[in-house]
Structures are given as C-alpha cells and as structure tokens.
Length: 461
Image (cartoon, rainbow, N blue to C red):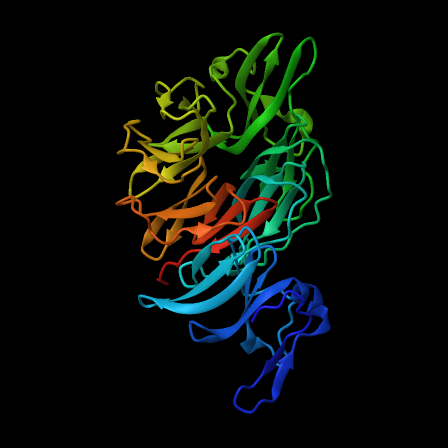
C-alpha cells in the first residue's frame, strides 16, 4: 500500500476482519515519513516493511508486539540504497532465498538479500559527512560481555564512540566543530601503568586527541608538535597507533608547506604513560627526515608485524605505497607503484596463511602485494566504477571475505581465493567513504550516517 499522507497504520486479521493492533502515537513521525507498507513473512518471520521518503527501507519483526508496531523504536533491519522515496515493496524468491524487492522514485528496482546481509543498521547521523571510522573490540574480564565499538569522525570536526550492537553512542562526546576529522585509530596504550584501549582522533585543527574507550574520558591533553610560524603551516591527514620496535606509539601523517615548499611527513610519538602529556616523545625528525619523501598527502597509515619485524605502511595521493622498517625508519623496499592517481586506504594482515597488503585506489581497483617479498599478487581487482575508498577483511561463513566500498555507492565483497564476488553488492544511500570490519560485522560511512552490515556469520565451533 502507498499513501503519501499516511498518518496511522492498523493491523487487521484478514480472515476475521478484526483489528489486531495499531501504530502507537509515539511513532507518528516515522508513519508520516512512510511512503509504502508491506505486511509479509521473511525467512518465516511475520514482519512489517516500510519504505520512506528518503529511500530507506525498514523491517519490523511483529512477533514481539502485542498492541501493534511501535515505529518510534528501532527496526530489526534497515536497508539504504534508493536516492529518492521508496514507491513499492514486494517479496519474491531467487534460487532458494527470499528476496525483498523495492522500487523508488530514483527509477531503480533493487533486490535485498535478507539472509546475506541480515542487518544494515543506521545509527544516529553526524553533523557532517563521515570521513574516517574504525571498529575496536573492548575486552572485559567476562569475555561474554566484550563489545565492539566504532569510532568515527566527520567533516564538521565531530567524532563519536558508538556501540556496534545497538548503533547508539557509547559515550556522550561534546560537539567540537574544530576542523575536519582526518584520521581515527584505536590501540591499547599504557595509562598510569595500566594498558587501556584508547581511541585516537586527529583533525585539521593540528591536534591529536586521546580518549579512553571504556569510560569516554579524555587521556592527557591534545598534542600535535606542528608549529605554524615563519611560513610554516601543516595539518594532520591520518593517524594510527600500536607497537613499533618495542614501544607503544602513536603515528600521525601530516602535510603542509615550509616557506614555498610542500612536504608530506610522519610524526612518531612514544610514551611510557600516555596520560602524562609532558612525557610524550617525538622519535622521528618531522620535517626533513626520512619521512619527507612522499609526493602527496598521506591519507592512510597502518602498523603491522611481518616475519617478526614491525613495519609501518603508508598510502599516498601520489599513487604509491611505501613500507618502512619500524626500528630504523628506513624504507624496507622501493615505493610500490599502483598505476593509480592515489591510494585512499590500506589493509595489512594475514589472509589465507599469507601476509598481504591491500590498497584501495582512486581508479576503483584493489591492488595486492605479498607483505614479505613485496611481490605483486595478480592483476588489479576492478572493484568499483568510481574510486575505491575503503578496504578491510571480514569473517564469513566459509572464511575470510574482503570488503570494499567506493564512490559508486556500493559495498562489495570478494572471495580472496578467486577474487570473484562473494555475494551481492549492497547499495548505500550515499557513496561509501570509509569502512572497517570486526568478525562478520561491517561498518561503513555513508554520507552523514554509519551503516552496519552483517555478513553470514561463521558456523559455531
């Protein structure tokens, strides 16, 4: 049913004609935004499906409601992909799967696999477009109570620590509006003699901030080390943190100008106690040391261990990937060319019993190297019609799955054995600009919102 002036939804037993429920008044706002409604069964569960004026589709499980569907609560599932209002909804079968079909004012008909992506939850929107995100697992003494957190920042200078499970903010972070957030990271760093999981956020206001992800409290004072005087100006472009040559470090990438010369460099900070601002030490020569060799800004930096050696990998808008020895800060190999105008994201880790580096490139491809030998692994993977902006690895039911997002507005999954598509592409309401994975959960930046996608979970052991 479609009604642009819909104010109330009543559920009626078709056989008896008696009402079984109604939408409570608390859900009136969602009801007025509703453009189409479908009552059906998905995977054997009775559901109500709505499509709204923004192009979002929401699915409510009606088995949990006695007096009707409360549209003021969060839906069980949501899907985003239409760029204009949803006009029609239906359910059909493709192979052995039930598929939700939608048509929109954008002229598109889309198929939604309700089993492959069981959840696509949109947490509260940000003030600006989301630029960076990362997912971190907050462990507790009770492993069953451990939870996944997402740290994300936007173009308005705001950042949020959210709970991946509920999609709600985990801590109240005040609005900042101080430059664009250009990098986020999470790592276990020493604080007053105790390892704490910290979120690290950098922005164009020339500062790096630390926050305790368990309490939401800031750790020490913001720091930067970037001086703006005598013709020198600089801003942060990326940040990461972790272990490097036996030290717990924070690494920031920066770009700027010294008099009339442009430079791109890295700052490596170390501390025995990160809450002690005065104890933070700069390990690298920032302006004209070995890290000033990039031909463009550095939007992505990752730390990792390859054959017992700590390495630091950077991707640049000059289209090259560089690998640095974590002890000497010297190149571990010559720059790895991509043939693309720019590198936007990197992933470093073990994939199918092999240390691998993956790069998301501006020409829409994913490039692959053996992280030990720096050998190119096959031809570039044509992942997106627009630039590829994010790459990560999730855990599917049959093993690891490579996940990518790009400016074509899709999240795509890849089988790392064949590099064929693992499952259907998931459209977003806006182009995806960043992503990260934790297990089978995928978090994606789409405009001013975060989107959560759940792959098929691996079988229980």
